[in-house]
Image (cartoon, rainbow, N blue to C red):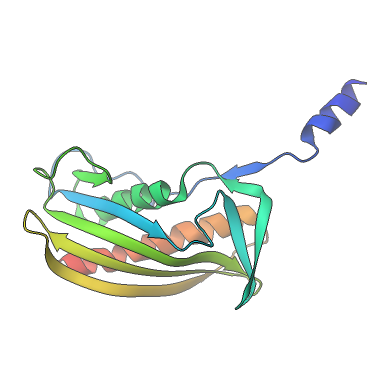
Length: 177
């Protein structure tokens, strides 16, 4: 009976995933960088992971979900990756309490962030960096990239998406220098 109870508890269980940074941002001060707000394309602005079956069709992974809000996760991971690349521990994700410690604000428009039937993860993100306090546009680009999955499955997809966000941060850091 215990085996049946355990089997019933695992049937239909959900798996939860988190994006990861290259590592923590350095501790201490440095140039203040705020990341956000982050907007997501409506098809990925959901708790579920998404796979593109074709250019015009997606599949939603009902039992494979983000562990938290995807836009907040993208902001947090991008802030940590930017901190590492720009050697600053003074990074924040939106919303922050005030702009006094922030020298640059980076906004993100994530247009694509999904897996594909071809075994790749893809990203398309527009980003803008503003110098504060006057919000003067410093740099603006569209970043497009893809990353091969090292193995099958959703953990490999999320790892590939994390690597894509790392490369996005490298592009932003280059634009801020």
